[in-house]
Amino acid sequence: MFFACAKAGLILMPLNTRLAEPELRYQLEDAEPAVLLHAPEWADAARALLPERSAGPEELVSDRHKVLEGPRDDDGLLLVYTSGTTGKPKGALLTHANCFWTNLSFDRVAGVDGEDTVLQVLPQFHVGGWNVQPLLAWWKGARVVLEPSFDPARALDLIAEKRVTTMMGVPATYLFMAEQPAFADADLSSLRRCVVGGAPMPPALVETWRMRGVEVVEGYGLTEAAPNVLIAGKPYPHVDVALRDTDTGELLDGPAAGELLVRGPNVFAGYWRNPQATAEVLAGGWLATGDVAERDAEGSYRIVGRTKELVISGGENVYPAEVENVLHEHAAVAEAAVVGVPDGRWGEVCLAFVVLRGPVTEEALLEHCRTRLARYKVPKAVRTVDALPRNAMNKVVKSELLELQR
Image 1 (cartoon, rainbow, N blue to C red):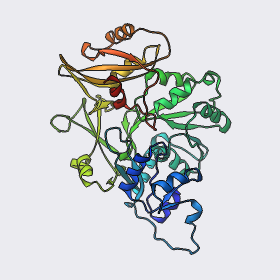
Image 2 (spheres, rainbow, N blue to C red):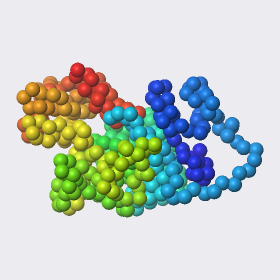
Image 3 (cartoon, helix red, strand yellow):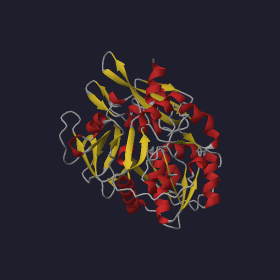
Image 4 (tube, rainbow, N blue to C red):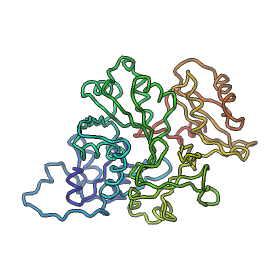
């Protein structure tokens, strides 16, 4: 369907089947698709959502041959709705040119060739499910092992069975695989590279995979950039980045910390039917990512948090990712997430939520933080949970953590 739409000049809008009916209905009402295509197992849901336009693949076959004009570079190709973790989802329109350039830039630094076998476990409703390896693999004539969903034990088996050479995932993908009892003895001899994005990868987890002989390449991107922006701390080819002061809006030179801006042919056309939101995020000719990054003297970038996640404690800026990385260093911590909560004395303080893999006291974790962080960055408290709430992309939903605190 993707290639049929691409050839016909139509826009493909993948839907997240994990969403509840009201969430799906919102996206369909916002996008107003001409046809809702569904697999047989989703027939009832499709008819309930869009009865007059739902169709199975066989219903789209035409008796009459139609000659269609080929699409232009700036025509829409993918309409991908953002996760909506900070409000109503918005449809990001990616053009043929966006997808071409982002795959070309990826190929120039973390390439795929015709002999590769790519394991694709990211959901196809996410931009990474297309533009981080799969489309490039098909472009280069490589083999793609396309999974309908992610199962960590099955993924390990597939690497050995299909002789997978490279794959893409979020940190949770590699965490869940590494936690499998079979991981230590799994045959990973064919796997030369793992690409990771979506969130910072804890250094300890990177080392776990490197100890198994697998190169881990950390990238950064966002849907609105189709998504590839940084790899191993440097901008992809054909991508320009800059930092701006979060208070003044001025561009920053040299080593600095500020909001990351992106410019290039990979940057999206805009939000579907939302010119106001488009103008806000593309102000000044740059795509404003909403992510805070640090740039060192060599021009390498490190993502340290979200502008909206920034915790200001006693007038000092605290980026949750920095505190999370310290907690991940403790042997008893499997996962960690840090949020800001109101505090009568300091305005805001950090509150940590952890999933444990071994026994440890709250005081021991706090002392671990005190020896590695400035006092104002140390969490006020640490809460133990059975699991961190995640969305369908396995990203932590911090708003749900805040609900646990109320």
